[in-house]
Length: 639
Image 1 (cartoon, rainbow, N blue to C red):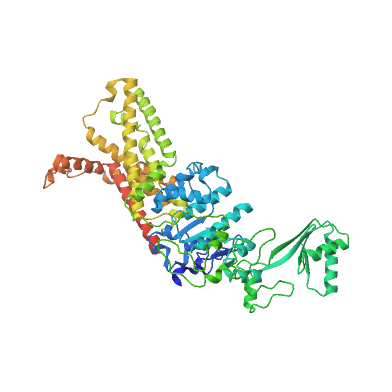
Image 2: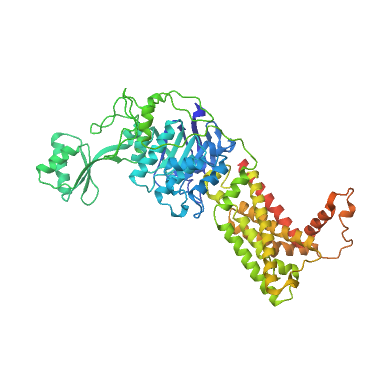
């Protein structure tokens, strides 16, 4: 049984300042093949509980997904599909590009994006930008992101908030279809009637504590109470007449004034109230059956008292109640009823061993019942073959992330334009050494435009991982996989090298066109100068990547790049200043073996660059940032 459930045990958030914890010792289970609703008013702790389950927030307790905590699952995205709030992502990224980026992150084929888009009805909007999607389309895209790696479990935080009735029915059909195929659905909601209509099991939270854990039938019986909504300009007079007739007939009828011309009548019917109003000449503007919410503590209080029988004015549930016995007026239940009168949950009593590749169809399900259950909601086809992990998968993801929006291209174009104009101005002013002239590096600036641009591109490398739950399934809000970090460093370094070469080339070409050949002559020591230039730009890009990953901020990443020449270089110069007894000997002359193609000379150049104040400061900063990144990841693993 344990391999078919989600077990949340003792979930407790860290206490806030002078306030109780948002979630305090919450434990519950969510079974496979069933829809479980996590119900609570705004502020009850639903979002915090989901964050604790997904290890996105710090606290105590543990959650087992089919017997294993999330950080023990090799590929968490394949186990849990998550939708928390709005779909995060760059507003300029296309819908299809966003899904293809997540495909690379999850290790599924790129064609999976088109399959999911077709399932959620976004094929016609696949080229639209995320920033222009409506609320309903955003919800559809969020569900597509959750379904992309074909997970066994769906965890959603109030996915129907702000949707129209039609969009809600579609979403509910998708959730029921996923459960019908053997998956687990856990979704948070604040609407008790919606939970009773859609869910098979309801877990109720109030002020961070668990107050009820019930099947849908018990939840509806103990918390939801049928009533008749009446609206009339003579509501006060009608209220008195209804109370008098109830006393005369010795019936238990409760009339509640809800302000203005609205009444809520418990224990009566629309026909009785309409006849009373007609006999007394009272105009009625509205008369409809509704379901009233008795509050989060109703179910718990009745269970504590031994679950007494409902009062005579409340309809008794049948011996074999349907899965969703209470449906608001004017809405149609999405739950099928078999010909023998039983609901599908009766056929779900026997568990089926899980299939690690394809979700099983539960025993007792018929194709006709499944078609009725989905109500027009078709899930994307399951992934029959899981591709083996490949070392280039993070690189492919990083390339798609970087090229999916125009930010990187705009930054590169801006760097080339600023560098070229700066080089022309420096040549016009004069008194600038040729290496600085080609690099467009005035002495007044701590770094040239190319180095700043490379650092900014590196800092932008961590962005989607801060926000997207599908990419944060490792530990914390930033994945700590060394493969992902290596991919980001490789792509950022390659981008920095291309930017460095293009910058020098554009500067030299523009200087040649404006001032002639004598300004752009190749210096005699071009090899160490080229190595220093490429090392500076690449080091700034890597520093931006590491700093953004450590501080989880693009601004902090760029600030760390600028801090190298402003703070670290003076510190290194102060340490290295002073008389020296010995001068360093060339490293090439002390090697026992000779490297081919003069490799010892190139190594000597690299070591001399590192020994310089700027090179030493950059190497020191990179080492410190890498250690901080690794320590942060280790802390996430052991917490």
